[in-house]
Picture 1 (cartoon, rainbow, N blue to C red):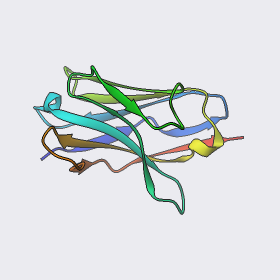
Picture 2: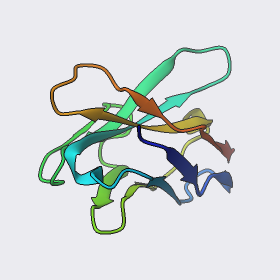
Picture 3: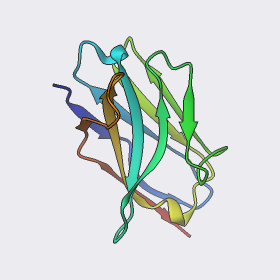
Length: 119
């Protein structure tokens, strides 16, 4: 079982930056592929970014590529999402998620953190 707790959300003006964190309870955090997802009001939850176990490979949604950076610190059991050049359309609840390397779907989810970008 993995417990995930996001933090770092808030209100920011367009063009600003935020850094989200996701603290994981698992002692074997480094064994999990981690991802960030977001859900805007009235919309489905969408993929934002993912990172492999060692952090050596990352993947991004087209809408955030070049503006967001996903990273992880396995020694601290923490996942990060650095968000720069924020746009109003980035407004959403952001979730971190974890899945085992042999799994095709994310198994564990945090409670989410709200990010609001004002124009």
